[in-house]
Image (tube, rainbow, N blue to C red):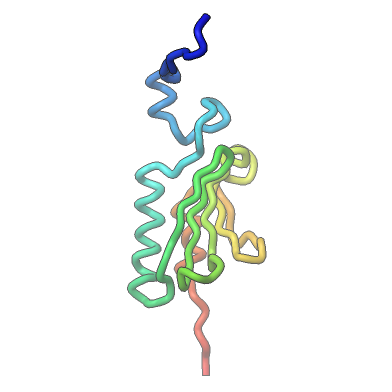
Length: 127
C-alpha cells in the first residue's frame, strides 16, 4: 500500500421520488421546503405589505424539521413575523403557522391561505 491514495468521488444515491418530494423531511431525510404554490401565496402577501411600506426585507430558512419565511421591517432588526411550515404538526394542528418575535402563535392551520389572512388585517388608530 502506498502513502498516496487517490481521492475517489462517490455520489450519494437518490431516487427520483426523493428529489421531487423535498417537502417531506420525515419520510425522505431531506430538508423541509416551501413548494411553488406556497411561496406564491406568501410572496403575494409580502408584495402587498412592501407596497404599503410596512415590510422591507425577508429571509428563508430551510432545515430538516421546518421551513421558515421571516419578514423584517429593516434588514438590521429582528423579524416582525415568521411564517413556518412544520411537517411534524401537519396531522395535529396544521403545518402552517404565523409567529411573532416573542413566540406568540397568531394563527395555525392546515390551509396556508387561511393562515396568512392574519397578516392582512392590520390595526388602525381610531380617533
